[in-house]
Each structure stands twice: as C-alpha cells, then as structure tokens.
Image (cartoon, rainbow, N blue to C red; front, side):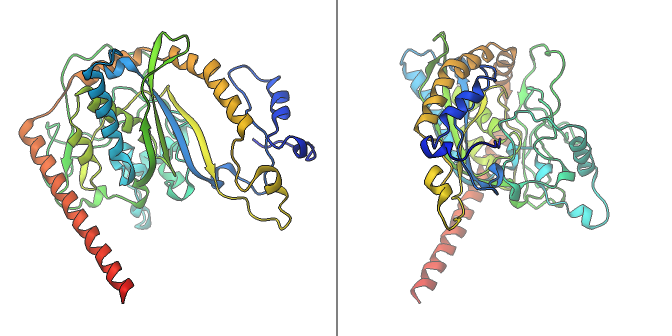
Length: 404
C-alpha cells in the first residue's frame, strides 16, 4: 500500500509508527498497519522482493503428538524435520503444484492450444480468487503465461487431497512403467457441503517416466529454490488450550499449492502414513506422484526481504529507511503483539474446522503395493546417484579449467 504524507514526518519517526497508529484507528482489530516507511518513487513490493517467508501452523493433534515429552513425540518431530530438510535447496517441485500451469506452451507456437491449456485459460478468466491469499506465485520471471492460468485462477479447493485432475486410462492407481500416468494434483473448487468421511483405502498414485513424455515435460518454472525450512517445537496458541507446531519456509518464489503439498507430505511422513523415500523420490524429474494437500486456512505470509534501494545520488531514502526496506524494531514489536493478541487466537479457532478431521481420516487410509513401490523407489535412487555423478563431473571440469 502506498500513502501520500508529509515527508518531514520521517525525519523524527523513520519507521512511521505514529502514522501507523493513526491509520489503525480507522481499521478493524483484525487488520493492522505495522509500519510506514519512505521508499523511492519506482518502488514495487512485488518486483523488489527477493525472498518470502511463510508460516504454516500445524495443530499438534494432526501430528499425533501427546505433548508428554515421550520418545514417540520426539520421533515424530524428528521425521517431520527430516522430511522438511529434503525440500531445502533447488528442486523440481512439479509434483507439488498444478503442473500444467507452468509448462512451456509449445502448442501455441504450432498454431493451437491443447485441451489442458484451453481449460486452464478458461479457469484463469473465470476467477480472480486464490485458494490461499498467502500462497501465490510471487515471482514474475517464474510465472506462467496469463492465458495458461496462474495462482489466482482457482478458488479454495477440496481437501480430498489425493484425487487427480487427469485419471489414468486403466484402473491402476500406481505404476512404475515408462509411460506417464499423467498424474496431476487436484485443485478444484471447495464443495459447498462437507463430504462424509471416506472409508475406502486411498492408494498412493505414482509413476516413473523411463522415457520423456512430450505431453508432460517439465519447464524451468517447475524448479524452485527453498532457502530455509524449519519446524519449531509445539507451543500453546491463544488461550493455551491448543498447541501448534509452526513451520517456517523461506524461498524466492512458490508455485500454486506448493507449500501446502510440502507440509501435507511432511505431516504424512511424521505420522507414519507415507514413507520418507516417497517424498525424496517425488523431487526427481522423471517422477510423477500425487501428494497430500494440507488445509489452506493456516498458511500465513510472515515476512519479505527486498532488494537495495537504487541510489538517488543524495541518499535521502537510505538515510531514512536504510539500504533495504525492512521492518524496524518498533514494527517487529507491533508484529509480535499482533500475532499474540489477534493471529494466534484466530488460528486456534481455525483448528476447530472440520477439514482437520477429514484430513486426518484421509491420511490414515493411505496404502501402497510393496512390490511396485520398491521398484519406484529403486528407480528414484538410481536417478539420484546418476545426477550426483554428473554434478560431480561438472564440478571437476570447472576446477580443472580454473587451474589451467
């Protein structure tokens, strides 16, 4: 948000604390301005942003934590963190989004668009709402074309997570052959009525591409870099009746539903409903898999890091706001107070929503075939070894060239 105000006010109050206070007098308690700072005239919050940090709050109950310091609790938290660590670094997150939205639209250059692309374009033109306002693709260079759909193209989606957009033609729910099963995570609109709890098993859906499928190719936009991801110990929220685990994720950009699938997978692993090896395999380019999708309600954009201000020759902006736009000490205090008084009690209320019982039930019903699963994991491990060898060889070549 930009605001016209007296520039002299920043000489004595560079964080704009008084301006923020005055604005907040006209806002509801649930919406608060933390700080008002001076920026250059060309500043754009989206294009200047280098990294985003999101918080996702997990109720301790969904992890099956007894909160008694038991060995079982420690083991579950260890698995949660171990799974989260797999996401750190640069990986293809094609299995953690609506994959088709981020493909290169080669069909258009040939004079026509595929049915998938036309469908995505139609959805993009029908809606301007996102599943979660916090989790939007916030990096223009990695964003799919507008006609192919973007992160604001879908409304809240069903929490029947493991359904697929495109079903395999046969009756198999998993496979390891060379042909793609065309698996895509479903992100359809939230039903108007809560469905009854499922009672039938939910087989894992996955396939491995022994050969490239031209209809299901990855694009550079499917690759994202996670700078840091961590899971705190459980803490009481609100009035202390409910404990939660806060997971912090920092990256330069995120795709539609990416964070929710990451947390869905991590929770399933921590509970023992999903093997850790399956998540590791899902980060391989030839892998096609459908992963659990965590509820949307408790995903929060918590912070941003911005590029340096361009020099104006006089250093006016830098003298008031510093080299980068950042939340100052007073703003941080206001943020922490808002979290304790408003955000955490609201999240505690959201933990009472029926979606958590639905999700808990769905995770318990996850199944897989041992023989097919073993083959799938073996192929993934072989691929990872090959990629590591290629990377090592390239590094040796670079080192040799530097010495010459």
